[in-house]
Image (cartoon, rainbow, N blue to C red):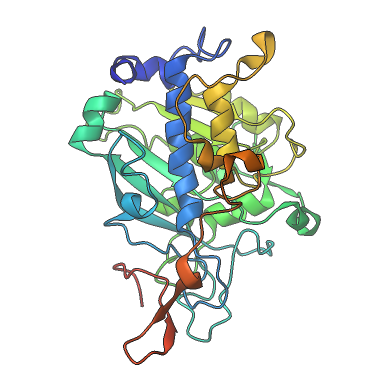
Length: 344
């Protein structure tokens, strides 16, 4: 792990990952898996139970977030969550993006929890080589059926990224990133103004608008790296031009080779992808052999990917009793949410 502190700039793409991808560098494997787990935490914490009045929110509060998503013991890199991110949309998007509670007492009628901002602790800083800031965002929560309901219209992103090249992005991503709701305590400002939701679009936005430049030292811009999982392109060729012109921005796309939806927006990422990073030997050498220790049980965390001989239950991660908790009088009550400061 000491190498990551020494090599963090090259692992973050300073030299465009030269000599690190083929074959995949051992420290880069660990680096990618680390950020993949930070992204996976958004799925593990997201409440998809529509019967709950907190459907569409985070089950866990910021204070103990990483212990509740089982990353405290699993990862040597320590962080604390400093902010939750929320999103809404002014255009119709499938339920795979925005889940709404069936309860009349719903915590929010329009907003969904979309991710978080985390800051490396002193312990984490020592292992990472710098005070790392992570913006982790949640993708969709359903499988391919939602694609049939989504229109892939392109809209101008010039107001976000500037007039140069007139970049265009998918309308749904743009709306989720920029929509606000003045009546909501969660989305009085847009997801963009909270620090963004779509990883690639958010990263370009940060650099294009100089949000990575300290006000007192504007010439010492912080490097911004987007490590995006199972995510096809967000915009058109002009968006790609804008992305490539910023010297402080790097984007590393991680996907499974047989991915059948390379031209669709993000549809989610599972632990099997991180396991692939731990053992893939690339397109040249080929084959699979674990180079980074990773618990094979994680493959079946949310899917059926292991042979029966491993004796790991299918989709084993679940909420106990679906959030129902027995009370002292013997009755049962839905209690699937930890109180956070913005809760009604």
